[in-house]
Image (cartoon, rainbow, N blue to C red; front, side, top):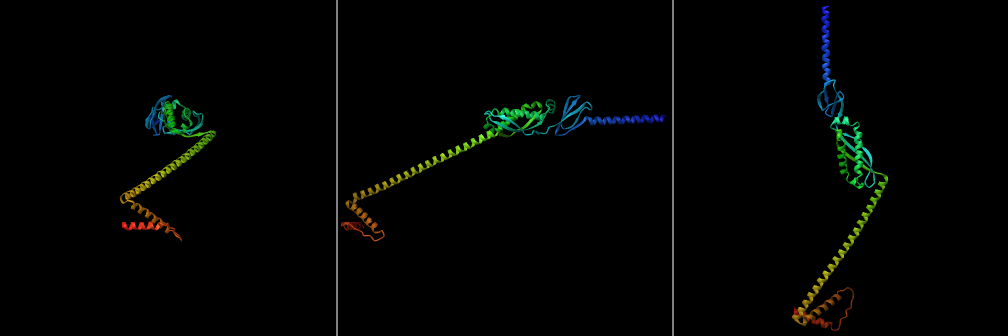
Length: 297
């Protein structure tokens, strides 16, 4: 009996050691948490927030601490949202937006807000309506970058209590209703027609200015030519006057005789059978001219 009691005692001790070893292994497994790089774990102890585990190996108290939430810290994109807004000049527009965000404080996100995406969507819709309500339609179309910056800044302020960082906020499109689009198209066509008329009028005005400049230039050149001819005639008259003053009446008669000879030569050089009638004293004039030429040579 003693051997049997000894064997039973040994078996009991071995079972106890095995159970103790299993308990230790379970405690180790329950107390060690390996957190991926893209996540954070929210730990509760008896139903209350205990800590937030970052990436890597972490230790918790087995059976007391429990990982309640595993939160991804990767950047997220909300589905494209579309909401109606009215500009300050009473134009109904439909704005399509998209928001990118990431969770930086999981303990705030899991305990302060239930539906993160829905809350951000509602916040963005309200801010977009408010900002567009301060602007006219032309400003909405022209200042889209400033509108995006204002929306991103206000959204970031609103979601700060939720442990969220808004990385980007985009306005994808601004659509108009059919009536407004037709009115804008009509206005655009009218503006194009006005610009075409202005361009045509400016072209005609420029053509008139160029024509006037051309006529003025032609008149200036004609006046200059007349002045040159007048100067030449005055110079010739001065030369003749000087010759008469120096040589007396013979110089004048010489010039007149030369002009007559040149005139008869021009008549005789024309083609065809021509009959030249000379005055009675023409030969005397030729004779005087020849005498003068002979005398001058």
